[in-house]
Image 1 (cartoon, rainbow, N blue to C red):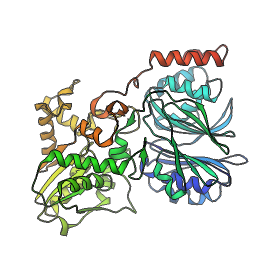
Image 2 (cartoon, rainbow, N blue to C red):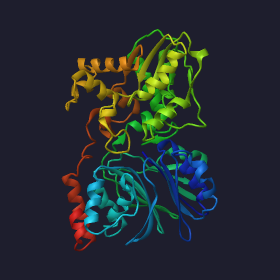
Image 3 (cartoon, helix red, strand yellow):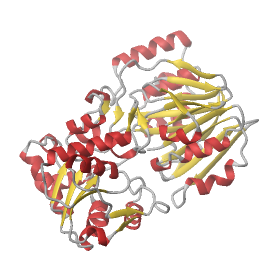
Image 4 (cartoon, rainbow, N blue to C red):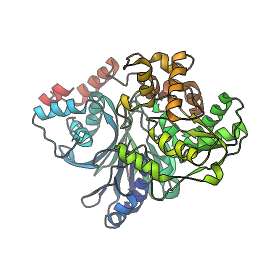
Amino acid sequence: MSGLFGVVSEGNCSETLFYGTDYHSHLGTEFGGMAVLGNEFTRRIHDLSQSQFKSKFFDDFRQIVGKKGIGVISASEEQPIYLNSRFGPFCLATAGMVENAEDLAARLLRKGISFSEVGRKGVNTTELIGKLINQGTDLIDGIERMFNVIEGSCSLLLLNRAGIYVARDRFGYTPFVVGRGPGSWAVTSESSAFPNLGFETVQYVEPGEILLINEDGIVQRRLGRRRPSQTCAFLWIYTGFPASNYDGINVEIVRERSGRLLAKRDGDIDVDMVCGVPDSGLAHGLGYAMESGKPFRRPLVKYTPGYGRSYTPPSQKTRDLIAKMKLIPIREVIEGCSIVLCEDSIVRGTQLKNFAIKKLWDCGAREVHIRAACPPLMFPCRFNLSTRSIDELAARKAIRRIEGHNIVDVSPYIDPASPKYEQMVEMIRQDLGVTTLRYQTVDDMVEAIGKPKHQLCLYCWTGQCPKSACQRTAIDIVEMKKRSSKSRGIEDPVQQELW
């Protein structure tokens, strides 16, 4: 997924924008970008696949001057984009995933609307979002219309002369937090960007809510959807930074609770130590150790200065290289010991097997017990750039070996009380080559997060979309028509086809 940060300041905002955006580096690895509005727009975009945001943008931010700006760490595409629209020029950065992007782009192309930001994967999604917004009668109407035609999710920051427009996706899958600092306002995907920059959290943006942030403060341009958010549960389990809060719930605390619940379900197994796969597995391991009374130790340490996350790069080769190089085993801690190793999740299983478990065995571990902090992943995410193929998932590979072919109905494998589930987990255990393997249950994961189940997106584990997230509802269409009839006259042909 991508991370977004925006700031409006009484003075030059570029330094705050630089550091605030950098605090999202754990969310994406492909591109970084900043756009600042002074006398005119200044935009910088760099490839981050072989370098870090700080090194690429350190000289840029000292040359950019303006009182408001937006930044992005992008998981896949170059952004922010610049668009000289019918509403005046603006820069736009987005987070999320639009499943029907190709279809929407084809419709616009048939009507003579062209795209300039075209890469190896096709039309740039952020430019597509900008072109869709441009079909409205004004920016707010355009954002709402965009919400109603996309399938998937999109949260965005839009920078123009009026300030920074903030729009959270209508189901609340991705978070936004607004903060106040000395002479400045900011908005961020990760609240962990605030403390060191002197910002205090003012409010969490509601699903579907549209705000305008400028020198005068916050102006609500459109109410939220008047429904609970359905925030991605994976943010707390893995993706989010430990110091961040989503919907007022801290990531580190959730992970500690998750580890405690894993230990409670485990009974009293005879081990010498508990540990976590650095970095996101550490708090799960700490919680397990606190609950079980077993000592927490660090048999695997991460070389933090040089290597980031191994989950986010799109290339398997790159993921494997990072996983191999970043974790350094300590033989003196490992040798002869029985170890509980807590991991945030088992996605493909290849990195855990080849670059964590193997290092423990090679250094003389007596036993290795894997405890995963979430259930087996069954479905690729529909709302953000993540695992894109069912065939990649460790659970699906195990099911395919058990059944002899791919099956559509995997519900028996989702139920932790079923024999099929036990058979699948045993198959994964054998593939990983560990002493025992246990997964967190959906109910325990929800309990650890502390939100009602219906207020969380659990799609990648259950295959069930957040309510109405997979298609437009009749209520959405009626609401959209009511708003449109009050704000516009006859639609042009493009609008008629799209809406």
